Length: 288
Image (cartoon, rainbow, N blue to C red; front, side, top):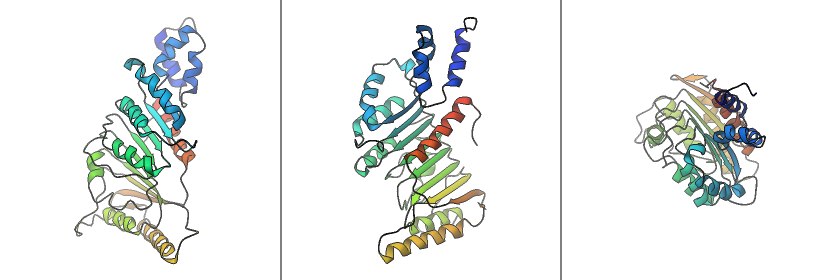
């Protein structure tokens, strides 16, 4: 180790720190020299619960911008009974948005998820490539706030009717190539909207359109309804029939389509997708 220059140690450390921050923090505790080499990596990857946010934001605001380049961020309120503090979350996002390449946010409380996600969709993320949103979400409303975004996973809105009719998804995410929508339930109107977009039907008053560069659409409904009245169950069955019909072919008008088995997407599912993405990003092998 003593014969290697600091630049090479830095490369080795960078390729070794592919987890949620544990390795970089451990390396920084070995020696003063290791701490100096690992310093730029300490905040590169952060996985935080709602309880941890305030202390971390306070620390980041006192850290030199040169050492607080956060590239990968995972936030959840699902692992504690403490809900997100909206102001604290938005302070953290404001500090990290210029450098983020992956962002996952799991919000289980609709009272906080709507204002937080609505504000996030209006912020600028120039380098963000992959985004996971789990919680009751509004739709993107601003133009070109996600110019580099390739992959978007939206989960938690049971019937996101209107997502493909406003045109803002294409405007906000002009580079989007992969769209994954999960958590659907009784979403007959959204199923029809998606079918219209896939078939490029422009005859309706409010035509549905997919982002212009989209290559893949993945759809997944939540668990089958065990409770509820006959009308709710009928709508849920009708939604599933529409989804199965439109995705009977693997490719529709140049867009690969797939319908995953019904499942309740949870925090560990989102964390697993995020962890896989940050590994590929750090080792540099890329993802199509």
